[in-house]
Image (cartoon, rainbow, N blue to C red; front, side):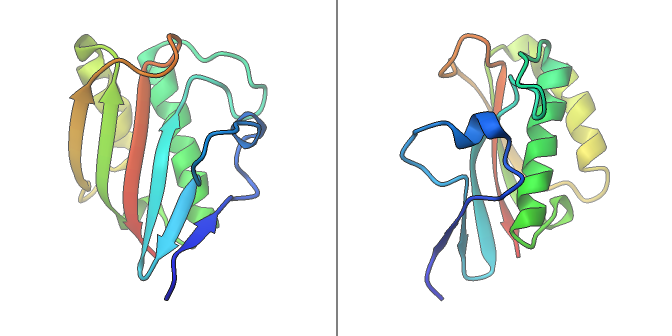
Length: 130
């Protein structure tokens, strides 16, 4: 099987408008690899989303929708990488994250780093089985 770039129809409009040289998701063999997803804009209104809890929730909802569009799901995620702007947001991020992965959570790394835009507090990428 070759790799297949996937641009889900349900991807938020503001993400579709981005002109970055990347695919939102790539299927290869039995896996799907998701690019880093930020949660600083509301999927429907495109308004700025403030606070780490709200941005984490928004990010994981877009990831959930993207996975479902590729034939996968949150339950099939095997690896997650979380990029946080502020180390002090770790506990609050975990509270929200836990609600999306309540049973047998995937392997995960969390990195504290500067993010591309000042309004971004979090970016998450993942690998899931298809």
